[in-house]
Image (tube, rainbow, N blue to C red; front, top):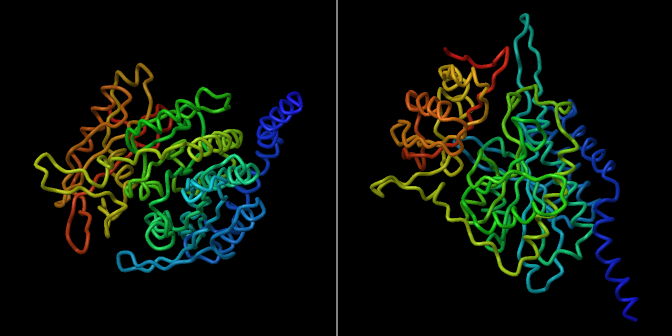
Length: 444
């Protein structure tokens, strides 16, 4: 009898490996197929509220339902209309759930999310004729969606391993200010207090020295760090670099500001970001396959913990105050009108100011020093830039150049809440890269 039980236990532990490792080549093929659909020119860039977005929502609904995920949204997605800065934004979320097996914990949730919208199209004048430009959004964020779909398949196939329930959330209108995730947290989902963690997949398709896979927790969350460190000891084929800060605004920000622990997986911003050059041929599909394995493992660990992860402190974002404790500092995602630079966002600031006037130090050029400096700063209620902080540095001289050029910034148009001008904290990545044909000016 003992021998029979031993064989049964062996088979029980063998099954998950066999299921997940059913055929890694088939996982990569599936990721490629889903990216190809999302970035097909017929999708016209998946603009929020467009007929093409509706088709994508139906497609994603079908993919999750076919994987055995119980769908919480209708086949067309849960559509919504939100008034933002005088405009009405129309989009839709696609939401599904895999129920946990533990009757004591199944009403707590791990959310795995990714936004599926992108910038849509624009019209460019060329030789006096209108030419349609399609923003394919392969990395941003077909890569995250395709990876999420693979995680959903594996969680659904092995639902007997998960004590807590896992929600798979495909958000619309992220590019318009994370509107889909705001709607989910504030209007749609009624059990926000029972969300124990949110894992966000946003721009996970690039690789190489300048686009290593990283996981950001928006704050120094010791328990999340321990989970990530523990996963690094497993026989997983990818080990994202842990960083206890935030990287860029995305859907995880709104969860974080609700006190929910978050983990943003991303391989980072690149020069094709928000351009028509963000195409599927530039993605590392093997990396996305490996990331799906890692996220599955992380979701399982969080879902099976005895206790909840300690809530984020939020001191880096919503509740930051100045030295006198008088002024509340918001984030770009929590204001009615964002702070703007020359009528644009942070990308405009990078392109029209930082990369125009930054100097690449001679010594760094001679020594071949490259990298990405992540910097935070405050745009106060009068539009002045202050409180500059290097969150992740590369080299003393490069860091100093970033501080210098940001400190010299002209005034921004301040953010507003209910018509009142307020201060906001902004985080941007500044990339130093030595190339023969740089896309920004290197001043000597």
